[in-house]
Image 1 (tube, rainbow, N blue to C red):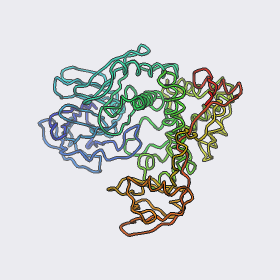
Image 2: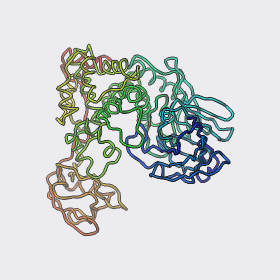
Image 3: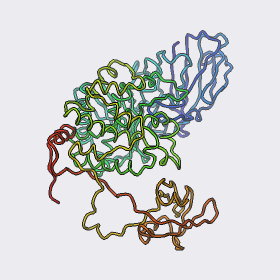
Image 4: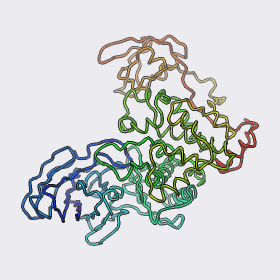
Length: 589
């Protein structure tokens, strides 16, 4: 079947674009158009079809109408009545500038096909073409193959490739660099931005070169970084030949914010290897109508996140101290998640469809992010391999084998196959590690693995100027601002509030009889140091309640990795191979 989509950017004031689909070579009495319920890389079922309206079908652009009905939320059935050619028209509302979005404004069009171009059921593998009817002065950026300049027409080998190739049209700033001899476009879309173009070119080039060196190869002949500059929380979505990132327009300064941007960039770039090519067998070709289950997302995301830090370190964009500081922040977040040992990494990967992307009030107590735990478990696995092999192997060794035997040749991983790959790559038996920390829920001894690299992981001591600061008591809840009141968002297992019955949704209005607001809650708790009997007055579902508890001690404010005073020779070697720099002895305080 010949399939041609046309996108017409002609109702920008309403954020509604007109679409048509021309189908030729039809031989069936009916055909179904289906819009995906999820986007690869974002593992949650969503209702993308809610913006669809006005769908009609005819035997041609000016032909006779054909019976058409919406038979499911994202499925339309067309009775062809013997026609070999069908023309479909519809409109879609698009005002969603997120990583997997469809966005249409007077000066910008961003298309992720899964949100606006339904596929023909039974024809996912057929080649498709897309024509863009946009203002002639607009620049079109996409990794789809260009067929014609006028009209602007592109093609994909199949629907999966179409979904994997976002299209951006408007007036972007486009920079081009050639790290490792490969053209990479940096497409900056949106108004404002406190970036320096030359610095961006240099730093993104360093990331690319470090990533290629990490894996030892590149499958690319070209690549595009899409950065949409907005005022919404940042994120990224990986593609085989591009990445779509949404970032704050002022993320490029100061230095800490910019390092976050570089981390997002490196993470998404590494996905061209891990996820897009090194992948579970189930992740491509895709079933777009339902959940695609795998127990390996901890590796696809958490391990990618771990390698992100190494890439920034190897690229010279993070010093050893900065790298370890980021790890220490992750350790704090992890140790403050009560659910970290309630669920295995494999199960948290499997249930991401109802868990990671749809957290609720009890999520921290019963689950853990496979990004977060996957990152730290990957770090421990890397240090375990370097330690056991006396630095002859590492997690990088595993990644390279995965690339050469799977990613490079298009071979998907079977569920449960990662362990055998790790054993083959390293020459070690990693079964116990996987049984305890990947398939099981045993507490990870992070301090032990840190010592393998000659580092001491511990709560960070207060500075002398912090020694006299008051230590607030701990209620063991997370609160949010609710019209000036402190409303309980999470009540954590194992801490005072949960034991006493403080409940998500409780509005804290008084502590020991004194009025309290969201803004002064911390000051009030300074008057209730750890061990203080305390009465909390709350509104619970509109009714007054009093809760009695004894304040606890807060978790450490910070953790740190510091060099051991007398590490073993092996620990020094592990550190140097891991960090890519010479061992630096502990300096006197």
